Image (cartoon, rainbow, N blue to C red; front, side):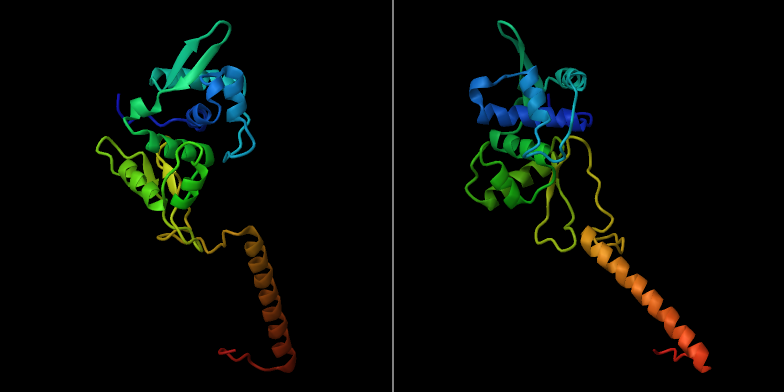
Length: 220
């Protein structure tokens, strides 16, 4: 089976990312039990966004992933365990699976961030190697699996996002769109205060001209 798949939910992609991650980081307990998988999905570190899924949510998402053969179930002596089938279903190599999992776990990242964050899943020789695999994933004839996002204002490098949940939202402040509002909330607050001060000064100046009986200079 090859991509394209119908868009997956955040929890469905989180499950896949966790299964890929734990396969490498805790191989002794992989495939994962339901409890271990839930803990990995709700983990507070190395996750963006952090979520709080319930067991019922997890089981529903697992049903969807099972219908796409993206997960593999195995029954042990007492509990059902879950593994992933990402590489085979999407027909991509292990290096690409590592990058996709890192994007599913941590959200959009630059190539340099991806290299650092995926180190436990696959050690890429350099950033250019990461970029080469990202380019392959973006240009697949069967359908792109990642996309390079427009550079954010003030950013030095472009970020990449996975497409397993559909096209991500592109901020209006990215090139081609302009909101006029700084992305940094502290900077936005400072700009708002300065605008208020300027408006107040203009009113005071207008009243002063009125008292003096003079006409304001348009060039002032």
